[in-house]
Length: 192
Image (cartoon, rainbow, N blue to C red; front, side):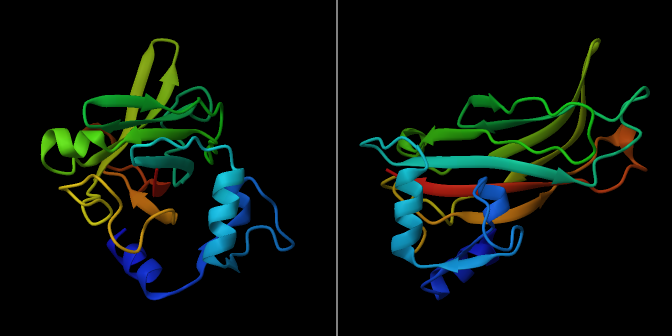
């Protein structure tokens, strides 16, 4: 994510993958370049709420490399939990698939930054939901201190209202040692 931040700071345009946004473009799946004004307009039209306080908007869009052997009877029923500053948020369950897709958007108030005096890490965990309980398939901690000013809780320079997009490699639980590497696509944005 740090390299993605540097790329956003170094250019005037940003890349948006239309398929991940749920907004198809002419070449679906092919990144297209949009101006900052267009990205702000798209954001305001996206239905994301606007608070007086800065917020961290987090979207988990998809996963790849999900362990096919995670569920004995079928493909896994995957969901992701996002933990930040003591709060836990959960995506919907993507049933019976090795390539789950989610459309969940989570608003994480940056007031927690001022309350804690530091930027808490963002924790992701991928689960397979079963009738008998959920099995953890992987987890990761994402350090986001370069996105947020720890004193004010506002966006760091160059990232305000810009999506930071990347794949996060999950660490496998010890009992899944031979399982493939799983990655979750995470998109972050600091807004007000």
